Image (cartoon, rainbow, N blue to C red; front, side):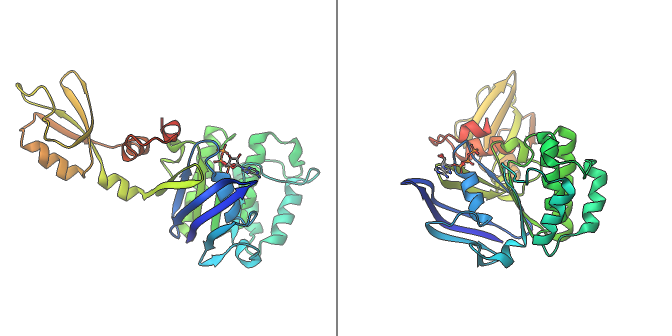
Length: 298
Ligand SMILES: Nc1ncnc2c1ncn2[C@@H]1O[C@H](COP(=O)(O)OP(=O)(O)OP(=O)(O)O)[C@@H](O)[C@H]1O
């Protein structure tokens, strides 16, 4: 479990984190989404023990991260600017990681060669950006961490490699109960992998929800009313309505059964519940809120 409580971090008087709180249940995949400058990387640097908060608590497995070497040995991270020694080969970096992580599995490292197919004798500097990202995943996954912290992790990876990497991460979540926190600008990217989502802006986590909570709380319906009903009845609590020909698309804040029952009163010709994307859910959850969040979800 990861818990951040009311974290404040200022740089020269500017609060990059301004009371940020979040809670990542053990074994879940938590997507942290927010526009540029929201504070995602700053928050992540607290989780990996690089920054010390001015106030608040950063707890992983119930313990403060700052200067806690034993705890940090259970956390693997891929920052957006992954660091490697300039002259190091992939194999040199493997030895470096192995020295820090007691749980490092050379066996897994060897197995993953088949996935990443990068010559381990090459210096990392000579690899492309995407290949360097692959090496970062190769090493992080070989550490067999309890916590995996990923900052914009699939930037620069091609679509096939993205899928490979997510499939490996999800395998670890399923088999070893790894807890994953992943940041991105883009909800669409996280849609298939996350079971929890937090939205961040201006140094705060504005909203966090589990996917179940989200999906149970809102529904999108396609409805065809009978002749004589051309408008959506006013008494229906509709968040958003659009219409193409006779088909009305309605978004309502309730679950599918409840909404279907409410519509049954009008004896429609067709009612069909269709899945909402995460993006749609957040747009309507946040309503008319004056946040830059629309930049992330649109
Ligand atoms: N070391 C620093 N010194 C001064 N200001 C900083 C520092 N690190 C971050 N900031 C400021 O804190 C805010 C949050 O930055 P951060 O890098 O955490 O955002 P982000 O959500 O990761 O953005 P992006 O999506 O662009 O990577 C920004 O306004 C940034 O300018």
